Length: 107
Image (tube, rainbow, N blue to C red; front, side, top):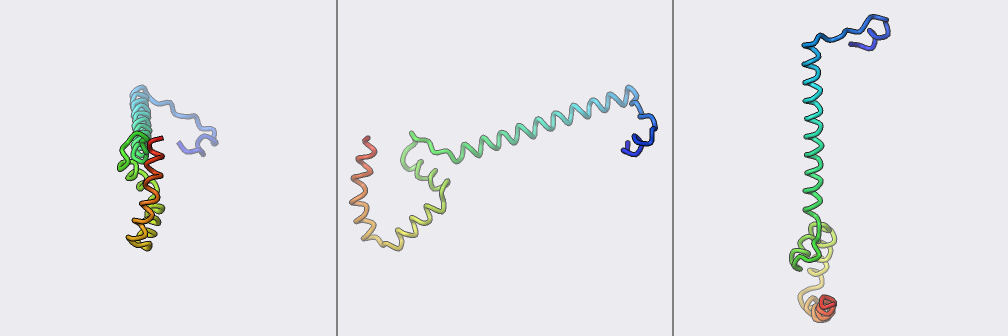
């Protein structure tokens, strides 16, 4: 029905029992589809959240990979700086930093 038919004072049509059955089935189907879409959205959100989480008890390599996925620009900047610094300077810095990292890991 158009809004103009409501304004013109014409009586509204009441559906027959068969039509009402069909309308009820359509309503149930629409609600079922809405619930399915909401469940899919929620499942996608959970899956997306699970992919980017860093587990604190995970091995160091797994944590580094998760960090790289979360912060690709920062990782690219560090790799670029390492390439510019050269291998000798990297080895020199590693000999200074590794004892500190090992001491921090022991707690």
